Length: 640
Image (cartoon, rainbow, N blue to C red; front, side, top):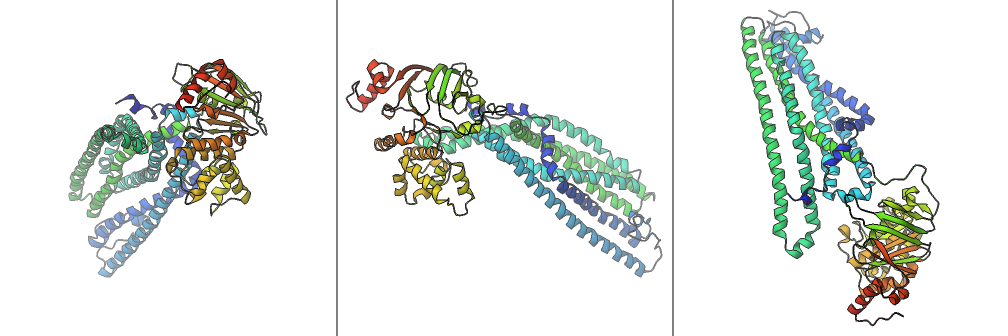
């Protein structure tokens, strides 16, 4: 398997779990302890009620039919008379039978009510815990630093939020009830077995320590296997997500066969791992069945001998086997619970590993939280390299930008332009030097206050599934909240006007109005129903609605046609009005009117100046300008 198939998972995130993962799961159950306590009480009542028909059968055989048995536990509990009815007329025996039938009916009604209560309480509480856990995991994941998302693939993250949390919910809902069931059954049945036949009870209960030992061995073996299987699931989900999202590329290059092989290879690895786990699991459960079978034969042998010798009544002998059947389920379930416990622990390690992973970029204590930002930006001897990379991306960058200035950035791909501007918003922190806004190091700001004043329009802007209107409204927190809370997807008239003004300023209003549904047009997943240029103009409108002090246009006109670029150019003054603007442009015509143009190469600033002065010096910028001019067949001079 290639290294690309193994990157982006959560193998290492398990090490960041704070405490035992399954104990952490119980912390999420703590707020619902009253519901859980009621559910446990109902579970106990249900299991005791399920034992009553067994005692009733014993009484019916020994007292109504054969009339040879002792009064029994029902008489000891005061539910039946303890007087002997040997030789009594049929009417007395029928009265006792009717009494037993009434007790049986009551037991089944009680069992049904208790079963409803315990399952309702456990299932609904499990859903509440699942909701809390998913919400916390999503929120914590969403607040991670950008490097977290660079290092973990989307499919793997979705696997944690969905599959792993669902598994924890299923474990809590199903297995906790089974554990309560096992405890009640072993306690109640074991006690009654000793009460009924002290000589046979040890034989019936002897498998318990053996089962515990076998189960412990099984847990030790299966634990790493399930961890690996969960990683296989995450990788397979990532591959499927990549291929489904990249369907147009696969079709364009006709790579169906290769992608099918890649999916098949990962699916085969997952299949083989599962088959191995299934094989051992079934062997484990079969061994439990053998142990239970041996116990059954021993009870048949020694219990039969005791019944023949008169030491055990027919009813007691029958009841003993019925109780063995009652223990059969919990004993077998021990193995299944252990198996599911290991699956749940593997999932819990990933979930609580994420919850234990703190963002690398956070607001400091006593953070600087101004009411507004002017927009003065200073880069002072900035050095930066991405995590796990030795090569410097930015190498000693110095740049002072006064508030309200428009700075154009030019240079070849990979020269560090986009990375430099990501440092302003603290998407990453510098390794050396500093980035300051209004004379204050960005690392001293309240993080969200800083980012609220900076809007970024990227080369490939992200569109949320929904309408154009919603995607533009996303730029203003209050407007978007009003839209979300509105039952008919409307906002106040002034907010609506601001959305439409932002669209017009971005050169988007005309094409939006030409669409059949206008601003209510659905953009599809990631904006797939719109062209690249349309997505960029909507993204610009979204940024403008935020009314930031600093705006970053990162190749924001790269996917628009010449006519659209001219529209945006005409509105450029409005876009950057009273704002500090950074414009990264592949088309240098976009930045020729900037207050200053900065040319970068290999992470360093190699030229700076206005358009005319840079052309006059005949450096890298002039070369780039002339090469673009030649492609457009336009004459160029230094006075242009």
